[in-house]
Image (cartoon, rainbow, N blue to C red; front, side, top):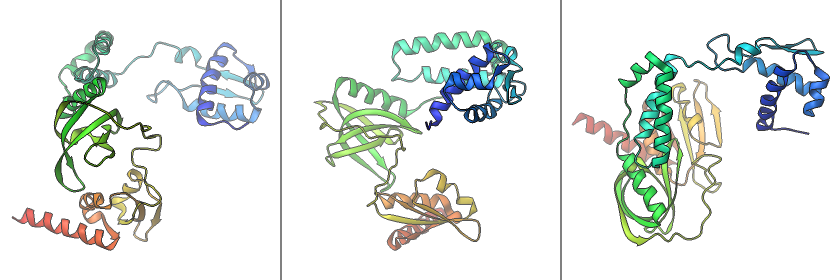
Length: 316
């Protein structure tokens, strides 16, 4: 029976506990206990030595087999309480303190986080000192998050002034918020009364927000499936071709695309689809000498005009 990566991960976690309690276990007995073939078990045993609590050295699982029996050589060492390094403690403390300041955080969660932070500070000892000299602040996005979270809880309509990078303009609109979610940035999915359609708004692009007295009344729609990412082009969306030099190959990693053809100079010819081709003008400006839009023709010319305007502004 075929298994996926999640099934294999669950099995391997159980396998670690099984082997810890049965030193020198027979390969056939272990395979039978987990309902897998000997070949599948050997495959798991090839992966386990690359797992552990850290790659700092000495913390990886030392598991080997002679084909008949299996031994875990450092079970006692790995089972010792985990020790957090100074840089890890600093990162955790700074992040925990920053999250504790978020306006949208429930008070019970904030208190639990602060208790955990205090315990971590005590365990970190002198290492906690460095984190006290660092801080992370959340500016407008935190306040917008709190307002949207409240609007969802109270089922209220929201007025906002929103910056659209594709058109480089501020627009005013009323929305009925449906949910908050995070994919790299934090977004609100909502029913937009201006366009009479579902829209997604990035919170850090909200210039101004106000809760209205009207009740939110979005139509019954199913929240978007984000398992494949935020940007999910449709087959009938306009096609755009971007050519990039080696320095622009990152575009293929960050933008969903139909194809990426290798070019002689080490660059790529990337074909992608988007419901709003004009939004890619900012990509062209960001790439600079590392890339250019080649199709459609009108978008390519629009990108060149935007680049000329930007250069002229620098000249002034």
